[in-house]
Every structure is written in C-alpha cells, then in structure tokens.
Length: 274
Image 1 (tube, rainbow, N blue to C red):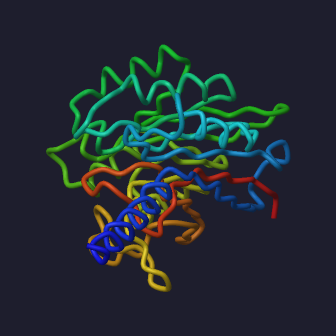
Image 2: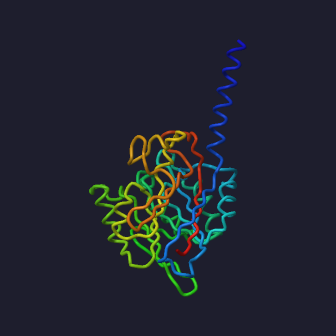
Image 3: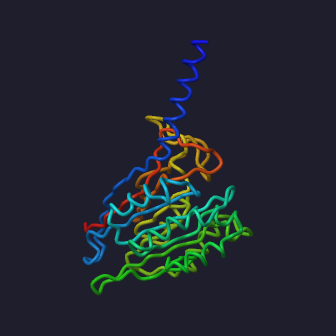
C-alpha cells in the first residue's frame, strides 16, 4: 500500500508539473535588423500571438493579456488557429481579442483550424466587428511619421482545397499584390518559407508547428503538422535568401492535449536598422 501511495504521488506530481507548464506563458524576444527598414520604424515592437486553440490562461485570459500588455506592442499579429476545430468556442477566444484591440492595432490571418471548423466567415466577421484587420490574401500599409511599410497576410492553403498546398500558397501571394516596400507577411505555415522567399518578403510570421509539441532536450521538437517526425522548423528565426521568418511555438494544443518541455509563448520582435 505504501508503494502504491508513493507511485500515485509521483504520478500526481509529474502530471501537475506538466499541467502547470502548459499554463505558464513565456515571452520570447527577438531583434531583427534590415538596411531596408525605414527610419520611422526603428524600435517598433511587434507582438505575435499564435495557435491559441481556445486555450485559457488565467481568468478571462488575464495571464496572457498581461504578458502582451507588458510588451507594449506597436502592432499585434494573430497568425492563425485562434480557435480549435475539435472544440470550437469562438466566444472564449474573443475574450482575448477584445483586450488586444484596446492595446494596439491587431492583424489576423486564418490557420488550418479556422478552415477545418467551416466557420471562417463567422470568425472573420466577429474580428472585423472588433476592429481587427483581417488579411485574406491582401496587404495594407503601416504608416509612421510619413513613412510606410507593408503588412501582408495570406489565407491558410486549406481555403483552396482543389489546389496543392504549395500552389495555393503561391496563388495567395499573387493576390496579395506585394510591392517592393519593406514587407511583413503573416502566414500560418512555416514549412513554405522557400515560397515566401520567392516573393522577396522581408520578415514572415508563422506558427502551426506548436514547437514540435514535445521538445526533446538537445534535439528539438518531436512532431509537427506538415513536417512530420523530428521537424526542423518549429521555433525561432529562420532565413532563406533575403527573407527571415519568425516561428512561434504558439499557445495551445490540438489533437495531443499537452506540451512537454515546450512552454506556450508569445513572441516580441523589435525592428532595427542594419
């Protein structure tokens, strides 16, 4: 009986540690520099929130909201999977959005779970009503002190099921009508960096990989959608030609219910000249 009690205590402690680590949001900060960046944008801060999957962080998302607020963002990027198609609850995710739009301008692109839920119109309408800029294969200008850069966003390729995902991604970029201006691209899927680089995008913001879900110390992520086992592109900064890509580990989970050695995160990117 004593051995059973000790075993159950150990199981409880391990599970408690895993559960708590899935609720502890980390802020990951990067500085990205480019000679092409207009002077007015030097020091600008972008907060990326990705792959919420209806997860909850404190009462009314208070813990997550406080993390974003502490970063003092100039703009906020929502890079897909705000909802989860397996347990769809838009109202729960909108609690976060309502707080974010009070802090800064917010930009959003779809992820595969929005498409899989068959609720894209409902989601985007709710976001529009709250003042979020929904980027669906298009682009807008971000203006500061008379200078501008381009913010573009493309839909998840599942939006065009008749096309191969790579072809759908290229079509989305064509419709976005990218210019030669310094360009920030919101695109849910990181595995298509080579395609984004073909269009000369300066910085891409992606998620989708969930950090590899289970991170093995010294090795990296275990599995990611679109990349399979031992994926290479799960977190951090990646480069292809002149393009850089920021990959967020995201916040929530989908099919597999927990993260292991893989804290949820928001990403803060500071733009610099150089």
